[in-house]
Image (cartoon, rainbow, N blue to C red; front, side):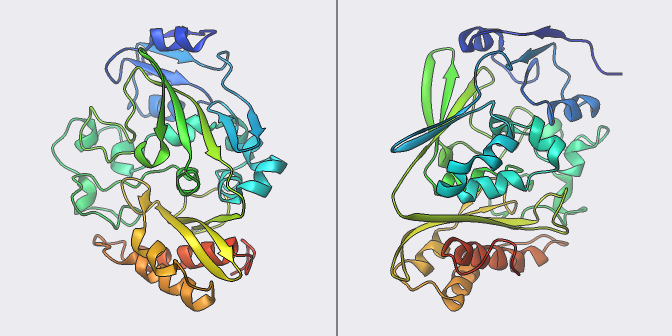
Length: 332
């Protein structure tokens, strides 16, 4: 039976933060609820308090010259369908439009996508006491791990971070505005995530009494960007591997290249070797493929997921060619 809890509906961000506790597990934030309700039904989240932030005013998209601000409570569907965002940041709108189905996109929010818990089936299985639920073992290391990380070096837990918006936001240099007990601060998305290793960790660097207010993305003239996901099927599925890219083009030559991988490591992963492989070169099928191979270097797949190495190569290559306008996202 789901545990009884007190339900709060604050009207300001300060009131919401004031209701949060200083340790994980006792309070949960409710925005779209697409992850929280699952966690409660799976007895992973058993809070004393649920705090709805729907009335706090964290929604909306503001385009203002040199930056775009997206409220943390903005629905994924609104992000995917926003005409100006589609022109400026296809790496984000494409990813948002591919999340779940229409029901999920009309309920899920930007902040929820960034802060959601992982989808490892051992973590989500109620009776399994894994590392992230107070146990002493990551069962995926020598268990069923075909959907887990392939970049596993130094990690006690081999989940993949589930956020599909994170890679695109990271290559675009986005920052999150966060409200805590001491006031507001900015956090670079590149420093927003961490690899959890215990029950007191989360998949991000926030404190239990922090609230994400918005994400700001700088608008840089001439930056080409795209995101590409490889899945078992194109609809209603989680990515097996994802790549987001951003760069400028001088003729066909790429500069300022940034590449981030998703769904292959415990955090969204900056692929520096891949970016260096493309930097200063003309964007062609061959150079895009070389960047893909560089992105996969260093992978240490588990017993069942070596296939993901090739998927990383494919995702990076296709993201680069899509950003350069040489392929459409849906082309194979």
